Every structure is written in C-alpha cells, then in structure tokens.
Amino acid sequence: MADIRVRFAPSPTGYLHIGGARTALFNYLFARHNGGTFVFRIEDTDTQRSTQEYVDEIMASMKWLGFSWDEGPFFQTQRMDLYRAKVQQLLDEGKAYRCYCTPEELDAKRELAMKEGRKPKYDGACRERTDHPEGVPYVVRFRAPDEGTITFNDLIKGPVTVDVAELDDIIIQRSDGTPTYNFVVVVDDIDMGITHVIRGDDHVNNTPRQILMYQGLGAPVPEFAHVPMILGADKSRLSKRHGATAVMSYEQMGYLPEAIVNYLARLGWSCGDQEIFSMQELIDKFTLEHVGRAAGVFNPEKLLWLNSHYIKTAEGERLVTLLRPHLERLGLNPDVHPERLPAVVEMYRERSKTLAEMASSAAFFFREMPEYDPAAVAKFLTADNRALLESVIRHLEASPSFTGEAVEQAIQAVMAETGLKMGKVAQPVRVAVTGGTVSPGLSEVLVALGRDDTLKRLRVACDLSQQG
Image 1 (cartoon, one colour):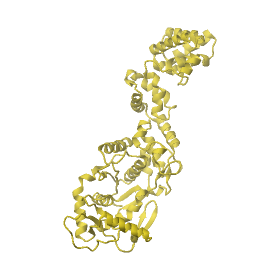
Image 2 (image 1 turned 45 degrees about the vertical axis):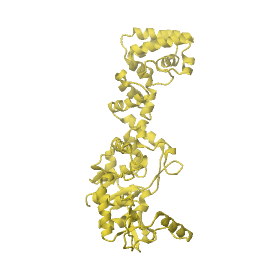
Image 3 (image 1 turned 45 degrees about the horizontal axis):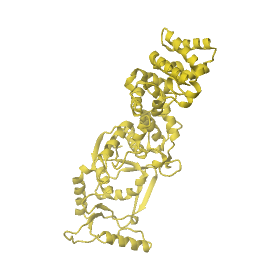
Image 4 (image 1 turned 90 degrees about the vertical axis):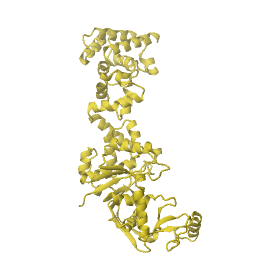
C-alpha cells in the first residue's frame, strides 16, 4: 500500500464540536495505525465568518485531545494563487467556462424548472459561449460530463453510484474572483497528496462533484470514507440543545481528554465487547472496517461513567495539576494550601465523576472558613451539641500528634467521655469543619485540614451552637 496521507480540515467559523472531534480522531487513528501522515488544514475561505479566536480554539482542542499533526496547519487563505492557477488551467483546457448569467436570470430558470417539475439545475446556457464581454461580472463553472455515472466505493457505506445528469456545472470561482469550497478542497487534497478522505457523511453529496474535479485536474482520486452523524438522545442531529457540543466546554466541566477520546472512538466504532481503551490501544486496533454505518447516539451518562473511571485511575500528580484551574474557577486559591491538594485528590477520586465536581465538593479545604449549610447548622450545631464540640476540641488539643490514628483515638476518647456513638459525634464535627453533612472519612478530612484549621473551625462552630 502506498504511503497513507489523511487530513482533518475544519472551518474556523465556530468552535470544534464533538462531531468534528470524532472525525479528527478517526483520521488520526487511521494515520497512526497505518504508519501514515496526519495533515491539519484550516479551511478559512469563508472570511466573513472565520475568526482567529476559532482558529486558536480549534488548535487548543486538538492539542488537549492529544491529536498531534505531522504537517500544517495550512491555511487556505494563504493559498489563493494556487487556486487561481488551477481555475485558469481548467479554463485553458476547456474543462471550465465563464458564466455571465445574472442572479435574476438564474432565479427565473430555477423557478421555471420547478414549475415544470424538472430538477432546478443550471441549464448550461453559457457552456459554448465564446465572447467575453469586458466589464461584465462572471463566475467560472466546471464542465460536468453530459451523461454517464460516477461510482465510488465508500469504505464505510459501500458502493455509491450517482447519475451525472443529477449534477450541475458547479461554480468553482465566484464573480469576485474567490474560489468555492468544493474546488479548493480538491486542489488542496491533490497538492497535499491526500490518499484517504475520512469525513462526516454530510459531505457525501459533494463527493461525486469532487471526483469529477480530481479527474478534470488529471489527479488520482483518493479513497472516501463517510462517517455517520452523531445524534442526540431524541435521534435528531446533535446540537446545543442536547448539552455542550464544543470540545473545550468539556474541559471546563472537568472531563479528562482520554475520557472524551475513548467515548468518541466507541461512538460508531467497535472492537468486540471492550469499552475502555488507551490511545495506544486505539491506534493498534482501529480500522475503518469496524466503523458502523448507523448514526451514533450521544449518551452523556456513558461519557460520565468513562470519565469517573479515568479519574479513579489517573496519576495523582496529574490530577493535582488538572484540579487547580477548577478550584480557581470557584474563586479559590489552591496555593493557599497546596499541601492539601494530593490528599484532596485521593479522598475524592472515587467519589467524583468530574474534576469540577471534585473541586466543588472539596472547596471547603481552600476557604478560610467553610460555607455553612443553614439546614445542617440548624440540625447539628445546636446548643445541645456544644459540650460535645468542646470535648472534641479538648481531646484534639491534647493529642500528641495529628495523624489519622491519633485523630481516631481522640474521637474514641470523646465517645467514651460522652457515651455517644460515632454517628452522633461525627456529624456535628463534620458540619463544623466542612459546612455540610457529606464528606470523605472524618479522620482523613481533619488530618488534611491540619490541627490548627480544624481547631479554629471547631471553635467557630462552638460559637454558632451557643448562639443556637
């Protein structure tokens, strides 16, 4: 097999969304599995809607997901001379022609065709025209064959045949001299030596037209693989109403990139019953033969499950690094108590589905004082519990150390002194130091807070219980 070259070519008219990320992933895996080249191209010819912000965000998304490219990024706006030269080549060879029909004339032709029950396609009025009136605007159209069929073997969908009678003489250069999408894609793919075009099946209708242009430019036609769309739970095309679709919004919500990659790989591709894959396993096992023909249905719960798995199994130091920005988004400064971060990660990794959830649950570790839940205060920081809290303070102050074992011994001593069981002791103490009724093991929490902060919070809670 010749050297495989694939490309991912987003338009910077919006953020990189989940569907685009899966297309990028399939191209990346196909290239890596086959020892090929992964080309990154920015299709920015829509200058009205393309922005640098979107370019930056797409590149950040690719890097976050781990899709390292081998060549690029190439920008179409920097390649206009090449496109103009190729348009001129087709004109010189009689494979394209100037069309002087006005928009009003084209609208009239379209309305007449629809009225007569014909397909509203361009009627070729300018095909044989030899005059070139000066100063009159024109577009350049590609001359499609008059008859025959185009057949290509889609590597996912199977054989596809289209009658050329269904195709227009499509415009390849607008009246302002700018080239059109379908044309520049072909020129770029030829120039970059692309051997396999793997893209969403919303492009499948473009493929026959593009095949004609490959042939018109005297270039080999690449293989095509059109990946089915991703649908929401209601089976409509995935959109914002189904939740977040932009890749980096998942980073902000506390997802790990490997969870997104794993989930997207399994959304349309299968490898037996295996659900969890490392990137290297995906590279080793990915083939287009195992990409399904049916649309994938996006399941947020499945993604959450995968994310929780990766949080449980990630290296602690890495989670510490990743947790920091989520604490900062809550207005907290993790550097006030950096020594608490590793303990927080270990306490919460089994309890958290996202890093944002972990940050929210552990926020009390990085506040001067916890934010008290009024209901928890009313129930547990009562006047009746003041003596209990004073006993806890006394025994923790007297403890020779502040290890987990020492804290547990102090709590046992409080239970012996008060005659109360663990539940009756633990909940008032938990509310006192965390502000709420849910936390990891109490001794773990107290040790992570340290003796000084623990005692400080217990004394404030005593004051609250006195007020109660």
